Image (tube, rainbow, N blue to C red):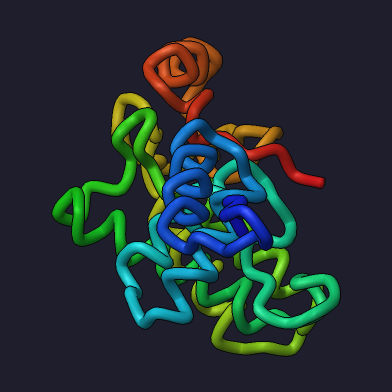
Length: 186
């Protein structure tokens, strides 16, 4: 909390605290983004909570989905909920076009869904969601959109969330914005 001195005692100033927290979050500090996401969650502002949680998760912060004490990956529910929210948010925002370079949710969606699956490998809903996203994405080249009829596409080895008909398309797509979407597997 931001504290101010008023002669005899220190006083908490909630508005200053939120101001500085928002400043730090907007400058890209993942801890501030996570705390702001939790603050908005407690005030029932789902849109802002999802915004800041997504920001911290997109930086690879493993505590992005943490709602209780402990490792968030021990609880697949918030991790998978983040994955599903990222997918639906981008689906609505970009009117179903999921592979806009620099704005594709597919690598991050698959990353968080796979993290949830590691904890609960028997969760049929998570398995079906991953298969649905992967089957749609690998049906065509992510860059040139050419169909994969007969020949298998090559997969991005860093995120496992993009498929290409060849090295040329992969390099073009990386330069066009996949480097912003790509999330390194751990």
